[in-house]
Length: 269
Image 1 (spheres, rainbow, N blue to C red):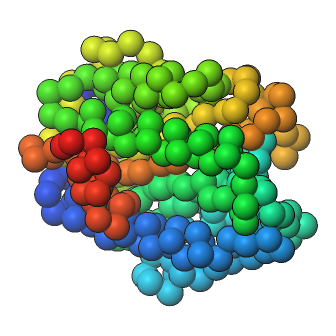
Image 2 (image 1 turned 45 degrees about the horizontal axis):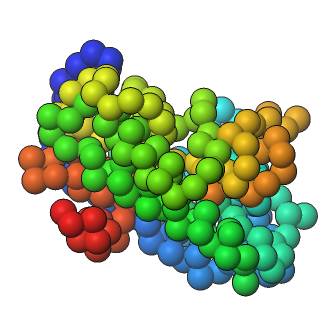
């Protein structure tokens, strides 16, 4: 069905990539629905229910629900929560918050995985810049995902952009990953590091790239719920993610509605 390389990176056929595109589109459209729903007064569980209904109504299965016991369809991480926030009825959004919404869906056995960080009402210029820097760093990482590149070329591109924009904390120990018939597959893709290391990228490989950037320290803690990761200094964090396929024509972003054309044009690709 697919070839394997060392480390075990799944190689997809063009037909399998089309199935991943279907999953990716479902995730992308779900996130756009949630982006519009974010407002002061809504709870993270309200957003979770919207996501599950939309995914199931459109023929998908939520990737996250039940994953190692996780109870949500989305990860909803607010302010100092970096990733893996559990949707709760008592977690109500307030004006000035930022919320990372991470979402995954399965279509015919293939996964899509994406995340956005959304402002709630009016946010400070400092937070707006954090979101902009994090999102742009993701796109620099995606742009480096070309045939013949090395895995850490993506890591370096992410870090280089963040470092060029200020003294931010780049979260370590969490990062991007392979994706396909499972949500999390080899290899891990750090969001920092020197270029030129790791496996050579080949057409048919698919990855999720996801920088997590903090206003303050890079240091993290995990809450007693066993899931939610927070900044140790209590300052806000941002998180963006897209799933993409390495193709002979360049990176194809499977969870972006336009497959990344607008952003790659901005970067001169």
